[in-house]
Length: 44
Image 1 (cartoon, one colour):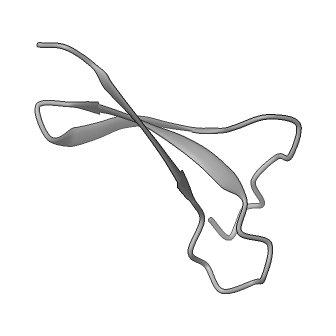
Image 2 (cartoon, rainbow, N blue to C red):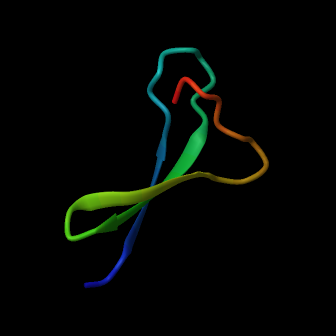
């Protein structure tokens, strides 16, 4: 079981397009974190 990191942006249609990193194991998202200095809002 190796963890995969997928970089994406939030799709909550607030216009921010916050950068995020998804941690995926066996096709299941195990963790979501903000990437960089921009913190994701609670809508995402």
